Length: 302
Image 1 (tube, rainbow, N blue to C red):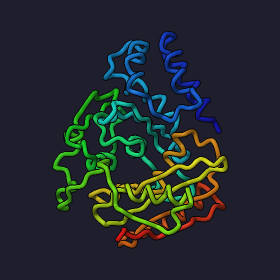
Image 2: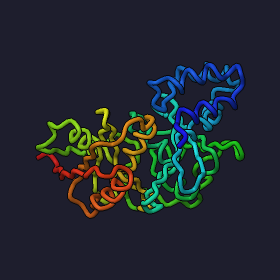
Image 3: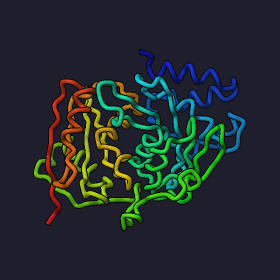
Image 4: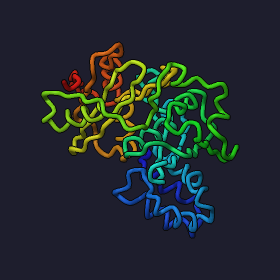
């Protein structure tokens, strides 16, 4: 199987000789975690010979190098512009043979997850390989910035999300004021939170987005090397485009290069109409056999 590094090296050959050293210095740096600092955008624009607003679209082929599509063989990359910092965030589609197709992660979900878990409170723009499917348009409509979000593709240019999702159904239709990527703190606690991996899953649950069910949940994955990747549950007004906490954590693991195998998995959730155990267990069995899922139920602080 071709590694992410090999894909990036091959993709860099499609850039001009002038752009290649600048881009290579960012994406092939061992510390790169699919985030391009806003301070590097001007240099990238100059090297690429484009305007600064065109840099996200120019980087989409590199984001697609992180895709894992063994079923569809369709590589999708996305680059989002954080509304809080102006940093650029990569995302890519992920598929998991042996699991149902609905367990797949779309590139637009991945870029949202990457930005959200790195402290962004919205996305101003998402550049993507092709026009978002209806599932992704619905998912993005829960974002804090949905009303102003621009979706950019090479074929269609920049278009407002609201123009791609006419007569949209969103949080307000279910009488909710919460929005995905807004800061959350649910005041959950666990007696076992002295364990650092459990504490990471608890922190993810505390910041998860579940206004429709109240099923706050987080997952923490620890690799064989000791790195820990968190994932937060993200619900959607249409329910089905919701993203599981394990899919979120796997996205962050993949965007960090997926260098080491998963050795431990912890789920923290609250008692609610939504139970994440069964679906998390099934997907974990596919991606990290024979790791067993550890489950903890958190409660609100008195």
